Length: 116
Image 1: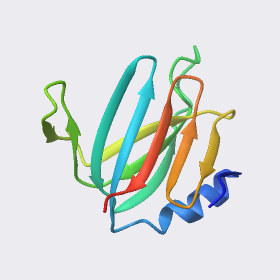
Image 2: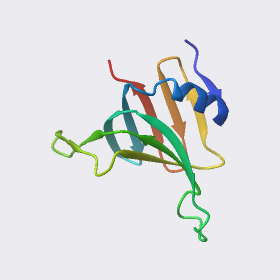
Image 3: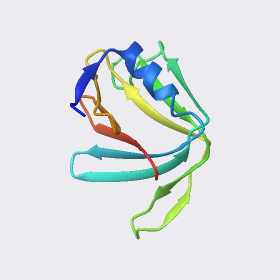
């Protein structure tokens, strides 16, 4: 399927269809790659208006559910909470190719895909 950009509303509608499934989240930031496996129970968003200096993202995508993150030794350990946060910006780009979502921000690229 051809990859195409989505509005945040389209992204939200499509991603919510994955609730109840296992997803893998890959985060590419600078020269670092993090991998998280999550039992996606729901998605939500939060807004933080307290950040004055612009360092923290004002909007956050919350992937809710129990999960585990890959450690440096290629082992997995439980997430500290049943939540995976993705900071969003007004300039974030949302893509879907039929198999995976891609969120591109100024700081990182996130790929979300179903675990088979």
